[in-house]
Image 1 (cartoon, helix red, strand yellow):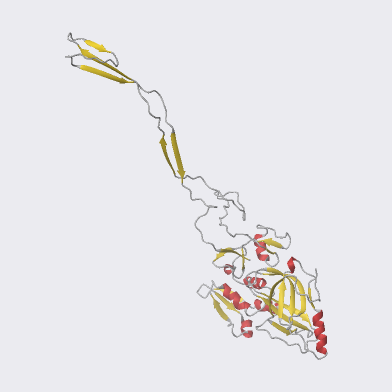
Image 2 (cartoon, helix red, strand yellow; image 1 turned 180 degrees about the vertical axis):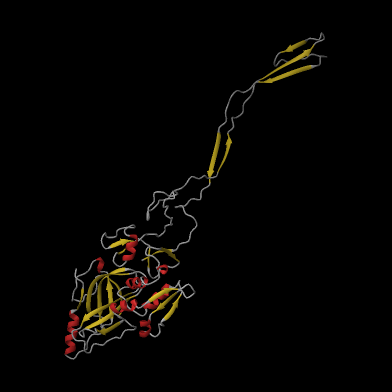
Length: 398
């Protein structure tokens, strides 16, 4: 696929009408899309985009300094637009009609603005209304030269990182030669410089600045942080398992490779997906959680444990029953002897006393009772095992 840009047939007709006394078109807005997942064919028909993602007013439109037949139209996709791959661009005039089309393949990062210049051939720019830029824009060559003049040195005091940028101070009086920014406010440093220059991509600009920072001040690519906000800070991506460009995020790809997925196997790779996960440090030979590799998953497991239990029960009744009894008695007679009286005999002996009866109850024999018991085990289980926790957004440094 060949990338490029082209004026539409509508623009050609407007230009021809302008030569006959009509007005020339005014570039006023632009739109970007992802092509529905594929790079569309470049067309002069002006039928809009295959799958439009974002539309806004152009930032500026100026005559190209080296080619007066072309107009450079600056467009900005803000950081609030989620990450996607820009594969198609359209520019529209004051009537809403499409005057230009372009195709390319570039990733718009999450949490960062994307700035690009659409160069459109007008044939004759005489009489084209020009919108001056709202800020100062520069070519990539100028940016590279300006960055090379920046020297950043660490300090042991409270000043932290100090910017020394004499060329920038000449071009922009509001940026003093010595602007002190605290160690923990490197984002302010990046934003201050980004406000003065334009780069092809924010990621490349950030990498250029990071390469000139003291080693101790640079957060390595692949570093995981958790933030108390819903979007990733500048320089970071959400650790959500997405496939991202190997070229755009070259430093991150060099750090983690395809550990968390190879993406499409050629141009993308996967970020770690830490959504809803607890983090466990790699065992690294200690022997507590052996056999694990960086990025490996581990399923749920319940260790040995006990549950308190309470058991209650009752025995049943065997019903009404009897026991056999044997009764004997000895009666002293007058001669000092005894007379035995058989069991259950009625004996009446007038004038005789000292009767000593003996009662023997026979055992009922071996028998059993039924026991009915209930055991209640306490239970506070849910759908997963977890400790108390707080939800934060996991992000990875690119």
